[in-house]
Image (cartoon, rainbow, N blue to C red; front, side, top):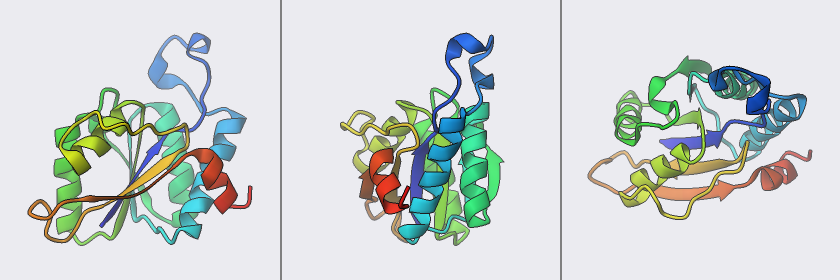
Length: 166
């Protein structure tokens, strides 16, 4: 199964709202999320489930990704900052057992960076840094957790934009 981690796209400045979790995507952020969604199509990804932090900016990013791919969005507290890497690993294992081929997780930095590190290297800090609307793909083998996950790719939003011709 491919697990694609996506950092939420550009959102309102924190000073514009009283509750950080209520920050919405900007127009630029909506464009970034669409660009990432299109790039995933170019990469052959077809997520059936998009899990998102309950923060508005993550949910809005997830909705744009799901709209492009026909997947469903599920809000998940495990992806709220700071994300729960153990819960992410466990949920991914459940989705793998359900036979899903591709899922997307939308959340925040540095939480997603740490989750990727925990999955592929059993360490939260491995030098991975997702840009806003950036994405990384980890392949979980069918034999997981007995077989090791593999970091397949990591792309900043500028590279994803080139893939989507935007």
